[in-house]
Image: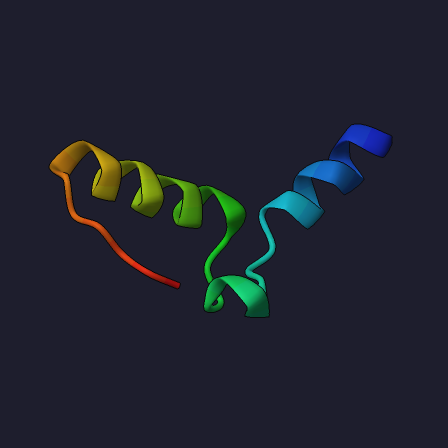
Length: 41
């Protein structure tokens, strides 16, 4: 089904995210905001 395909694609690591999944990249970003660590990318 379409939801299964979307889930599979969203859980796939991305080269543009340093081979992290979108969820891992978002968690890392949120943690950096919460802890006040500024990063540049």
